[in-house]
Length: 510
Ligand SMILES: Nc1ncnc2c1ncn2[C@@H]1O[C@H](COP(=O)(O)OP(=O)(O)O)[C@@H](O)[C@H]1O
Ligand SMILES: [Mg+2]
Image (cartoon, rainbow, N blue to C red):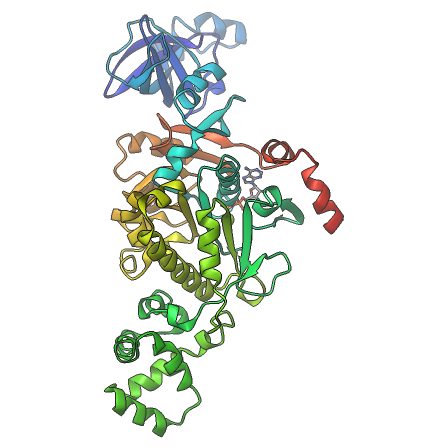
């Protein structure tokens, strides 16, 4: 036991007087504490810690050795923990929100592994071990089924551990067949292998060779397939999304729309065909379609970079249909951007948007039974670029975020700049993992609409790399945790076959 209940209220939280043997230095904001009432157990989180005294006189003649200090610890000087209660459980382990308050002197103790099971595992459909409380070695589970039923997000600054956490969660989703993932892998970290410093770690394709297909926009020996995007799949709205990469102005957007209206699906091929034409020829074309000559010339020039993307090809083989087939059949797809397309925002945003829109359209048309058979989770990094207030209506992700719960397609967004995501979209995020954040605006954004946001923000400030807050739809109460190690133990546990997962990597990379 660490202490007993001294005062408090359901609204403001409980105050625990710490046992004299318990040093306040051994407790941490965010720790899990259980208050053992007569009828219920109350699950709480340490919200604050403070040292107190019942008599100020003692500070005029402070104890000059440990023995004297011990003698006054308890009766005169003592410490308190402020706890936020979140849920309570009856003697049968049924959990509910806090409705009553425990009696005076109810005992407070640290949560045990069994408590965590009662809270996080017992009522979950697909419980999955994701981490341990900040100062304990016990397991915290997230319900993967619920996680995929609504949009979810992983927020945190660069280096906070977003990608590692994401790989852990996606491994769980794939292993337990909860959903097919469509991952737009901007930095090549989810496919076969991931680099961490100078080490190579297995990634999803390596861990689940049968359940993951890697598609690449460039030639990559690790890929199962290559991506072709026929130019007719690209619409003017796709280019608005990448306008800064194309140095594309509003005028160009209007001209593109005009060309689209005149030429339909052929609009882009038509514009590409104007490249290399003389000023006079373009002016004649402009005349023909009723566009302003200078604007048309500018638009054609802005499309130079686009026409150099080799994956925009008018060929028959249809990699997007192939992808949809995999997804429908429970196989996850990682879309990679290797070679000259690595870390290229233009390729990333364009490809993610065009593919997701096609898949969305096809999925919308499926019969309900077919959709229900297989849930799809679309993963996007740098999500704020797609989901900013300015752009969310110009791309498919805003639509998916808002409506797709009913079509069984949800988003998993990974981002370091949550304050730039549109508020309405943020409010549609069911489960949030919040790793370290530094910027006040970002911290405020992640807690928008969260009742206990103010308290959780205090915990957030104390987090280090690889630590996260987890709250929302897929857990019964918020929790601060250390994300489990993405290392050998994890690989052994998650892999279907029992062979040494690192063996292959060592063979390849020595
Ligand atoms: N769960 C984890 N297991 C092992 N190492 C981790 C874990 N989380 C973070 N790390 C370490 O922290 C580094 C940064 O993590 P990463 O996920 O790449 O951050 P982010 O994607 O937020 O920029 C990793 O290279 C790794 O060394
Ligand atoms: Mg990352």
